[in-house]
Length: 185
Image (cartoon, rainbow, N blue to C red):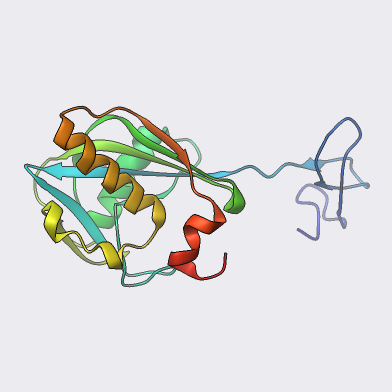
């Protein structure tokens, strides 16, 4: 950030009085510009014994497989964001269940919230997907998954399905976890 979004004057990056971390500060109007993590909301759509995955048509990770998910918009709930992303990426409607995985990625300022869902009807590739398909567990393209958050969510799901219990999973992805997907993080 170079300029204040309130008054247009230059900003500096410093720790405000009474704070404990650097922020963008505008000395002209006094605005402190807080930057907060972005929420990625999505679903793990299930149809019988199969999982719906989308092959990405956009960067990052163009051509790799993912669950339907994306950045939450203002003025929507996490459930609304998850359902919207599923409609946008897979042209699919889902019946949402509870939050299934909450994964923190503090090094890139993101929080993933994936909801367990039942696929309700047909699906097709949306504008952000090259293709959309249902996969049995043994068909999952493990070496072609887009993000470690997706792999972790799927591994939890298959282990939980074997036990017949689907608890909430809360975890962190570190830069080291991401390294095998993106190289040196």
